[in-house]
Length: 516
Image (tube, rainbow, N blue to C red; front, side, top):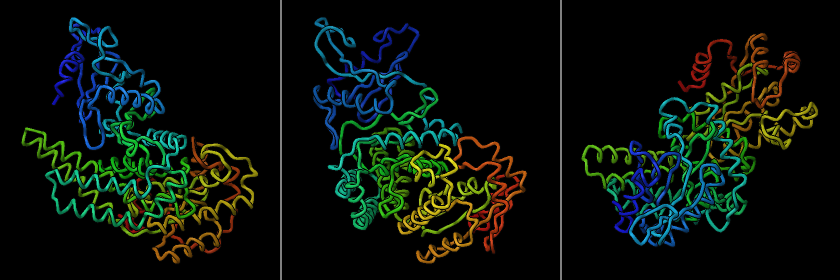
């Protein structure tokens, strides 16, 4: 429904001639509950709806102008070439409308560069074009954005999430979703919040609540010059935008998981953690809060979907929308009942395929979106103050640095398990005392532990090392020759030959872990 005061403006923006287009060209209009978007030629124009909702107020011309200017500012952080200007819609004395023309200003627009809608990530996942390389690039882009984001400790924390739960519950009460189940969801979310309040406050005070995106799902990510680009960040409500960085990421993880791509969600989480400034060694990492974060994101999708469904006139379409909303409600409840954690270690010499196997195992373990993969190569790089793809000098592989690396690895394993999250530990683990320490950590945490020793013929390992690109490992053929001389001691872990087809190796590993 178009607000009465915007009927003429919407009609004007929908006409091709308003944008200098030829008669045969068309304008595509996309409606959301808070805006109209007009795709015209090389540009896109966003008009804020003149509405007042519990979480925003666009009812006045001044409020819509302020929101347009805020949207331009917040989205230029991640999409500077996409967001171009704020422009007025004017109406002359003779009644003719124009964009930035003569006469009185009747409304405001965000002017954007139009992009190919087929590059939206929700479409790429449907066409099978959301590759691991694009997911890696996306995770790095989000981590880079989060690191630079403004700290906002006045928001977020336990109080901020309590407001989210209460707001969701009020909205659920006005939908056709099963009220007993939505009340159960709110009660269980409050219980999780009570248990995690101290953690959330430490994260807030520790600088992890920032002005981030706020609506980070697949439809708000596209490719610009083949690079993942975040757009349409929230500008209209500081409480929605100034949140824990892991809560921001959780929307994307939940979206991928809901679409049946837990593997992709796990890949994004683990690659993000390799670049983000998260506190993984102590008790302030994101893992204990992740089930609540994911549940809240699914709950938002549930009530938005149910509210949208109520406005659909066609019965079959309304039923489909309600079924989708119910599926999100089911997911929101399921996230609050995660399976218990476990520890799996994957060891082997360089080129054995252990890291690839660790990544394949992780989505199948524990709480959504699967186990955290803690890789010694990545930890060593972080301790050295470089990103995971920067090659380290030989001095970084001395005894002292190796001790520090494994101390950090073991500390991160303990922290993740204590937070209820499963772990896949990925390192050579050539020393018996390192393998013994993993078993000791699992026993102390009272979680199951299994180790796998991955191996392949020397020529296969050498070939894999030679073909590596953008890999955290700095191992060379000379390093492999040295490793082949290691005395492994008594190897209790089952051996796994990885020289065959990748799928076959993964299935064998899953069977041995009881996951197939």
